[in-house]
Length: 456
Image (cartoon, rainbow, N blue to C red):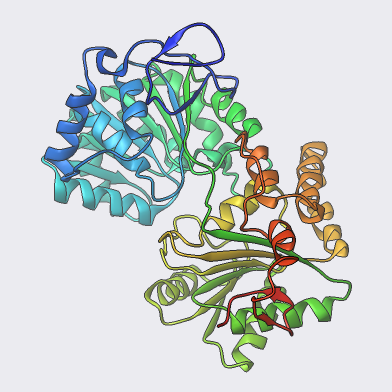
């Protein structure tokens, strides 16, 4: 038996489980093979039969057993860790239908196709792309229980007919994907997510599963409160991405910074993503990279929806080496071989920054995340930090500036913000390697960029 900080026995292998305050604790004391009427062997058998899994990934089994025991559950797990398998496996083991609220229509379609193609269960989607007849058919299947999984976008909860259909359907589980969109001061905030808590009560509060790849303690608390989760079990799984090299370069002049961004992106392994705070900034950097001979695209909300879709498809298929974008780009993007994520401008928070740099190195190979920072850049973010939640927004920006200015291990600084107890040095950030470089004379450096990079 493993023990936590108190005197109560906890079965080993439960991972980082935390209570509803977000602090690591021992909310579950039963052995994982006797939770409710299901066992870990039952879960693995369903996973193997329906998806061909040999084993479950870290964090999946614990979250599934929590749901099967009837606990509202918040799972914070990295992209690519198999979050969707949690509700799919649990849903197949529960008696009634599963409602999945997801903000991205493309991801809804992918999940529906996967379930319908791999399992004997039926999944339907309800969104704005459906024709009237298709929508009616999907609603009928949802109401009758013929559809095991029902996917919809949060804005569909404004439609009383749909809500009425969901009331009639027997729901055993309600899943909120990309749950960080509930955070009212993050750039991914979706107002329609705030309706989910109200609708939950109309639906007699089925068990709730909230999923996200990144959430600080404050955001976790907001998710729990907004979704009216009852004594939830919270599972945190591996915030660290050790293959991503972290760095901040400081500049005095805007032109100097632009030149460094362009040079670094031209020289770096590709493909890569560059984030800019404004549409004009994104287009300017893209133009300079194109002039330098780099196959580059730009992406921002000022483009028509079809243009954005075509640009994203080109980047995903490898027709472009670099995409320069505002924060309109990224949610749902899962390109495994991205070698760098650069930020031409400071983010509004560490939450946003970690979400965006997490798009690098998903294949597990070396990648880098560099912030190109001028103190003057804070002015634009401070301007956007006005209005509602001004104090909270400015506090989050202050913490982001602390990351840019710290002289200690950047990975430690970043992970401890999310509640991880990681202790530096990490050996893979600029501050940690500056100590190593004093004793390492065999590293070649690109003098124009001035950063440590093995080029031999």
